[in-house]
Length: 124
Image (cartoon, rainbow, N blue to C red; front, side, top):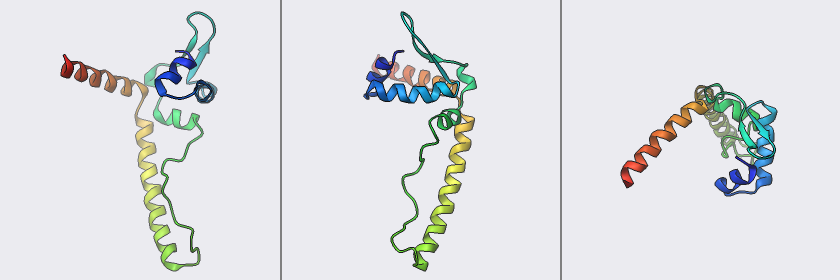
């Protein structure tokens, strides 16, 4: 697919897609070709690309938007709550990263095919 095709599917700008795809290309996940029949394609089999590979290639974006408070850093209550929240978020992130490592693009493709079959069956 071209960057423009992907941008249309994702409802975003092609420049954003090209920037993202460049990170994936640098990590050896995708390749791009020019001219007729060009565009982006996977550089490796889907079974060899985990969600963790993609997460790492995209610069390890922040997973959780919540976190410890910093309004009163000297407050013992805030410090205690921050420790508990911080520990819970570290545990949750470790679980998520393990799931990312265990899930490949082939797994997602299989899930998509199954979901698409159900959609066709429901509308057919």
